[in-house]
Length: 152
Image (tube, rainbow, N blue to C red):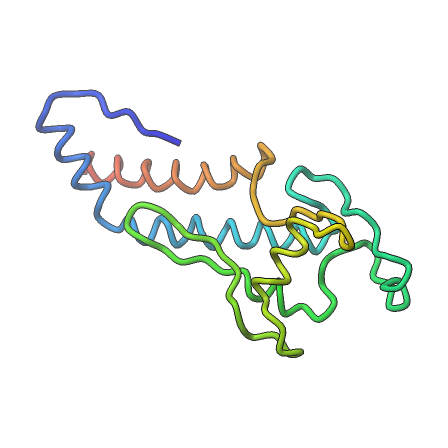
């Protein structure tokens, strides 16, 4: 995503300065929305491309969860979080906090990458156009708000 600023030097400088004000708030909103997208889609049993996850193994099916939603205890999905910075949001899985003492991050990597025994169930990411557009809309509204402020 990029924003091209056209105009004279003073306007460009003013807009660049204005865009820096409250940017962390923008990236917090974008990051929080990205977390919601990843968690909600995963709970529905869909991977980053919108395809249903591969089925659970026969051994795991003793405690069936349909659809496959990577939510045995819910700890891993609760650990998906966002951290806002001045110019970006970092989306990650917190390491600790599992009720069984295991690593949320390690479990997320195992699901996301697979290991031969466990099939790859890539849940951590955003690539569907409609999901990307949800994040774009947040940025667009933010810029529109800044423009309205300039026109006062």
